[in-house]
Image (tube, rainbow, N blue to C red; front, side, top):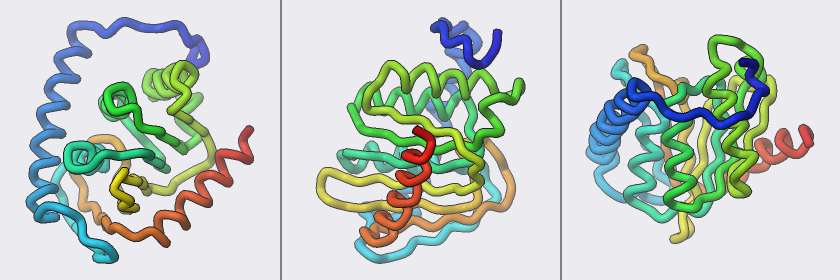
Length: 193
């Protein structure tokens, strides 16, 4: 089956078990992140993290979804995994949040990654509040705007996939930085229409 065959697939028992395990891991990591931040993000304060633990932006998104009401999420990333895609789909479905995803074109046609790329494409076609754009992208940043008017920016070296390398991250509530990143992501997205 090619990546562009967009027929719906059912979750196998193995995939279900993997998703449940991943959800448990993400929940633990979100709790750890909450301890690092110590509650609510303060405006214009940068929190910097360096870690060699398996930790990615999905953990931070999980923390933010549990702590704030989000109105929009922008993600620019090179690589994801199927578990991260499923978590984003779950957030969109349960929270009705507008999500824009910019991901590397490399994975759209790569056989190794076609399943999660296919999932993103198929999901966005059926959900008006989800947008997926493929571009030659290596950026790793995500933005979350909250209903209480916070503009959260998370930048770093890690992708939305599992890894246990030394990674560096920065998170802040900063409207200017948020608008800067949102503008260039929108420009790339609009240039692909």
